Structure formats: structure tokens, C-alpha cells
Length: 482
Image 1: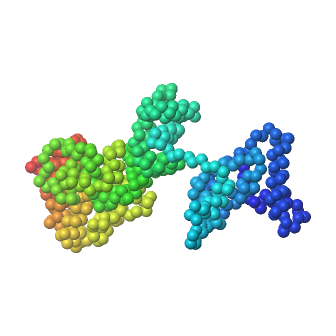
Image 2 (image 1 turned 90 degrees about the vertical axis):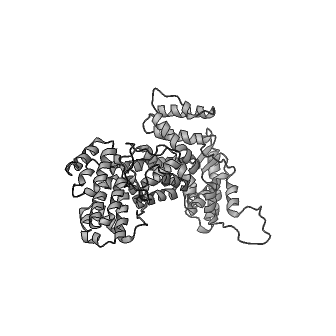
Image 3 (image 1 turned 60 degrees about the vertical axis):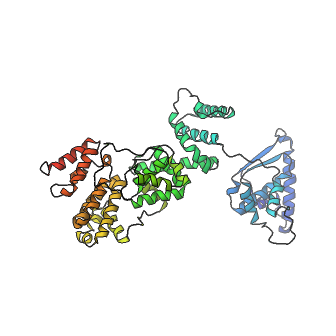
């Protein structure tokens, strides 16, 4: 039913010959009388009550809210008519205040007297029925049912909803949810269980916000898939929780990526979340060139564990959500998320001149890479060259897709600045051997690249991937077998 405006109601019964001056009073009274007679007519004797449902009133413009309430007020005196308004009372009151503002100042004003906007609303609304927010159980069940809705028939979904209601009344957990006709729901049940704690707390039990979060998650997964970003849905959901519900902590994550510290910080965060430190797959000693400064701490090191004390409680709590993120390549997804937010990822610790050079060296465009000449690299001071090499090393470690470009850029810089060779080896050794690309060892040609022999030996001895060990062995043979 589309409610008419007040002036439209007058027009329904106003005689064309009436003067404008007396049309409105006659129209209001006349409409009420005629409508009251209609409701008492013999033709509508079978109608016990007419109930009009008005939804989303709080989403209308202030003028529309007031016009709608005025139209409703015309019907209230008519027996047999009822209206149900689904709206946020405070938002409706805010709209009414545009016509009936709060009194300002005034000594001796009685604080118990209702403000005009509330008084106007309460004279129309005879009773208020507040809707409770979703409980923790309800949030869990709602998340589960929203997922099942996409693949189950209406009858199956209704059966699961009835079972959830039964468990709720019996104060039991959803883990006791029985199956329906052999339908397997363990995956959806586990997914809902992971998201429930934070969604229940941060979305304050709002069904609409829960559903919107899940819709946003599905859209983000689809976009990421189209971009070739292959991540477990649980990982995307965990990152979306951080992005949507903990925006400050998500910005911190983006800053780690920009500074090339994402891996080490995530390793430390996993330790802070109570997960054991990462173990070296080969179990061998770290070479002497392995870095121990901030640019290349090994996972699980004392320094990493010390950093675990620096994280906010909210971030640590988020890290405890399943699945763990250690060893997961998040760079591509985080770049996509940053693009959605319009946030540039810049390493604030790197001088602007070096930032531009690094961006070109790591660009996917060959023209950008070639725009950095050997002369540009030679013009750097030794300290600048070391900073650039350390930055490139962190980028190669945090962004597996940029690993080849980062290593080639490190080699180019160290070729022009032999003083930075130790930083170059440390940067390469900081890349986990199991994440070294199969063809990466072949980027080195011995004996010309003899300085990198410890790096190749490190990858050969500590990688669990056969193609990497084979490639590193092949590269070492170029040195005459020494």
C-alpha cells in the first residue's frame, strides 16, 4: 500500500467547485468520516482489522518521515485501522526535530517534560516493541543458515532452521546439530564458528550487518579470484574481519607490507597468539651470513618473540582465529584490498629517492625497470645502496610474485656497490628456502657470482623442494665443481 500525502487525501473528496480557502478543513474531516463509514459498511463486515506495515521509515528524508506520520495520523481515529512501523525510534525523532527542534536554554525548564519531537512521536505511537539483538548462538546459527541458503532447497533450509530453533530452546550448542537427509554441513559449520566471536562482538547482533559482511566477503572472494589471487576462503574471511571490523589494525598490516616487514611481523604475531614458532625444514645451522637485525630476523627468534609483546590485544585476538597465516602469501590480496581503499603502499622508512628507484626496479613493466640505469645505481652512496638492498630483500621475501625481480635488482645494485655484497647475501638468505622459486638459483652464474656461493649452498641444503635443490646444484657446477 502506497500511503498518500496529506494534500493528496484532501483531493480525494474535495469538490471541484469548493474554494481553496475552505477545502482543506472540509477535506480532512470529510475523508475521516467517509473512511470510517467505509470500514463499517456491510461490504467490509468480514474484515476484522486492516493492518498497514510501514518498513524503513527511518531511512527516508526528514520531510518524507513527517509527511508519512501526518498521513498515518489521519487514519488513527478510524476504528479497525492499525499501523506497524518498523524503524529506529531515535532516527525518526531526529527527522521530526527538523520541524520541532529542541528548546534552547531557559532557566527553570522542567527536565521531565518531553521535547516536542518525542512528544509528537509518542502521541502517534501507542506502544513500542523493541527487537532484541542476535545472541551469540543466534549469530552462529544465522551465519550457518546464510551459507546453506546458497546450496540447499527451501525445504532443507527450513528443516535446518527448525533444528537450530530447537537447539536454542534447549540451550544446546550447534555442534549437536543433526543432519538433514545426509546433507554434509561440517565446512559451513566450522566457517561460521570461526567468524562468530568477532562478528557477534563487533556487529552488535545486527542481522543486517552480519548479512552485509557475508555478502561483501563473497564479492571480495570473486574479485580476488578474477585477479588470479588463489587464497583459501578462510584466509580471505579472516583478512576481511580485520579490514572491516578492526580498520586500524588492518592499516598496520598494510604498513608492514609496504615496509617489507610483513613476514617477520606475522611470524611474531603467530607466536603472540600462542602458536609455536616456525621450524626450519632442514633443521640445519643458519649460515654465518644469516641476518640477525630487524631486516631479517628468522621466524621464532628471540627478537621475534620479543616483538610479540608489542601487538595490541585486539590484533593478537584476531591472530588466534583459524586459519593461521604463517607462510601464506598475502601480498597480492593486500595490494587488492589497499586499492579498494585507495591507500598507497609506501615504505615511510625509505628515503623518497630510493623509494622511486625500488618501485621502478620491482615494476612489472620492462620500461620502468630499464629506466633505472647502472649510472643511477652508481650515483647512490654506499649507505643508500645498503638501504636499497635491504628493502629489495624484504620485498622479495614478502612478495613471492616479485621474488625474481627483487633478486635481479639486488644483484644489479651490489654489482655497482661491492660494499653492499654482505647486505645482498643476508637479504637472499632471509628468503625461506622452501619459498625460493624453482628457477631462481639459475639467475646466478658462477664463477662470476662467486660471492653468492653460500646462498646457493644454503638453498641446495635447506630447501625441501626437489626442483630448487636441483637448480642450485646445477648452478654450483658452473664453478667447476668446487
